[in-house]
Image (cartoon, rainbow, N blue to C red; front, side, top):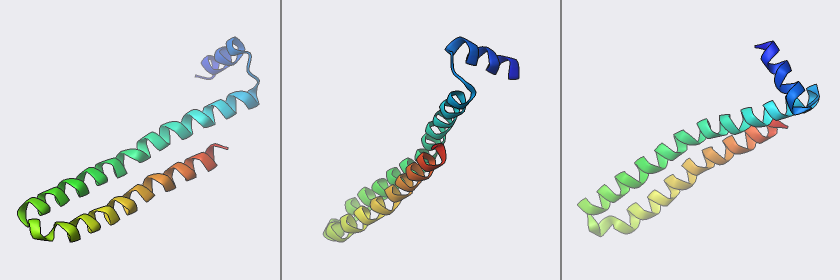
Length: 91
């Protein structure tokens, strides 16, 4: 594995610091991609259940919609926190 890393560094003309920065950026992007899966599933679940609730009780649609948007905002905050953390760790 180490010889492969050396070969890549020699071929790309990168020094060790540049290679370390490139690996950190790749790792941060991959980690954020994985961190975005959870909030994506959560938002889909929240919206699906809200639509189901509105279909069952149309008279409560306004309250359900408001609650749905709050749930989406809190779930999306997790993705944004993950983005900030991985960018900070990558630098």
